[in-house]
Image (cartoon, rainbow, N blue to C red; front, side, top):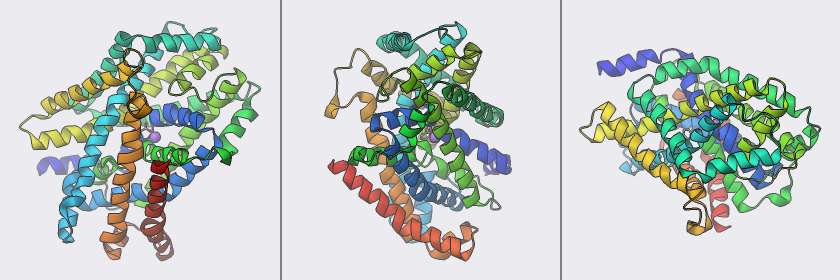
Length: 450
Ligand code: PHE
Ligand code: NA
């Protein structure tokens, strides 16, 4: 108990909480996944659905996770079962927490492999490899990396070791404090990159691609991908934000804080898109190149701008940093769960959870080379893991969360957690009860049928 109070004291400042929430949300999802999914989905229509999903589904679910966490004051599984028990409801609601831990495990396994790519690109920056590359050059640089299982494994291992080290060492707080400096630096570098993109002669084309919806591209799968990405990018549907909510002070305004996090996350993603697509078009690259898109476009930008080697190296350092703060937020709930369910100490639990994640990551490593022929359900292993998590587990868990807050909990209890005017609360509750769940359900069914 004393320990719990101690942890709570550390979170007393609103800023520390914000840094943890922003640290978890801003990561590879913004800089790597958002641009490549946009490109695979054909641009503006995906972006529009993604923005609508963020506003009408992501924001209310983020607020729901935080208010549940603040009420429950425990890990997500215990929180859900305590609150459900108090309301005399089924313990099945605790499955929300269980599904979250499994999803975190699956996501971290491939997240670490991509984090490893970013590590490799720090090395390319330091050794000057970006200088003077053309489209083919960046293509083969990336292709060679993917073709080598040993190198991918090495970088994936290094990324996992860093993540495990931070979690086992209990220094996540320090990392999050550093985020206060490094996240703004990442934002500044994105501005520099957008500035470069504006000089490529294809800036207008890039912006059109991002912001002018071509509705003929809107298939069920694009809807589901955009919805799933709203969950992924905000770290929702995994109980992570719920766990953070247990450290939220009663004085914190959940709505305003959630809006800030959502805006920051969205701005970083759109900034990455604005930096990348003009470069894609200026160099006649394929916007639908897939997961390698960022790694094949930004080095071109860095190779052609003045100070590019310096900026490029710094950029990938900051990207790794952003990825690490997200990765620790994925590893922590698995470790906490293991620590509670087994006789393991925290360090042992971290090693076991991290080791198991590292092991599963090998499947993603091999999917780019030795196992590239293995295509369950016609998908690469990376796509399959992404499908299971972002398109199935996260939306379902998120749906359960918002149904719980909207329909199971009493109006007054929710009201007491959200410090809003009557009118704003009425609007919020209507969204939480009807718009968000119906939205998720429709997209979900529509996407699965597709
Ligand atoms: N939100 C993180 C990102 O955008 C990824 C993440 C997903 C982190 C789920 C935690 C949980 O990179
Ligand atoms: Na994100």
